[in-house]
Image (cartoon, rainbow, N blue to C red; front, side):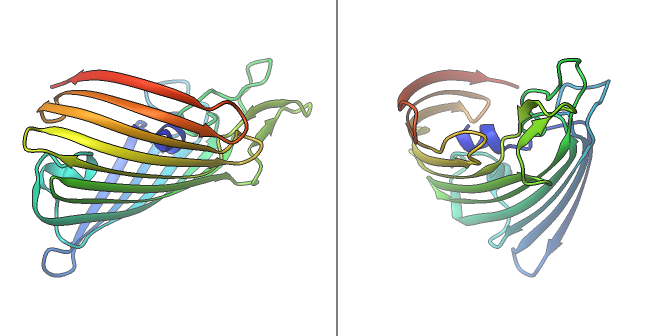
Length: 244
């Protein structure tokens, strides 16, 4: 997953989700989605300390549905025989968020263990395009606090935490060969608020072998991190994934 995803993803939480589908004629499909969840994130089943998270999303598929929900996964495994495009926008209100990235990150507490929370607002826009072996994905995200200040202070005025606020973009493209080997490239740019972190550009190339779709695959990637002030770095990863 991209650096943008790790910083801005809304992730998951216990709650309810409502979906509505509308066809505007022909293959054009519109999806409206609303989610209400507890805002502390996944694997928190008791002792909630934050507020609720309210998420609204609109998805437009002008050329119809993707095969096997391919608009939600990377890689052109199904090799769409006609061009498919998905456009989406979402807005999340995380009321009284007590973690630095909303549903994820460190809990914000003072020295006595008291939780401090503020409302986080996150806007995301994304697109997915697939045709034959080619896939293209683009993402944009921006997050801010209700007070427009990411720094959290306790009652005594001491700084005790910082929300990850700011914006970022991610663009990636890949080509799936007939042998189910995929070559992909990705560019990610992060623009966090100056109180949070430095700007960062990430360049990635990746190779994947899909053995049984996304259920059994082997992947490797190499990334170069170009940071505004601190030292640049490289990262190489390899992984095998199996699930059923």
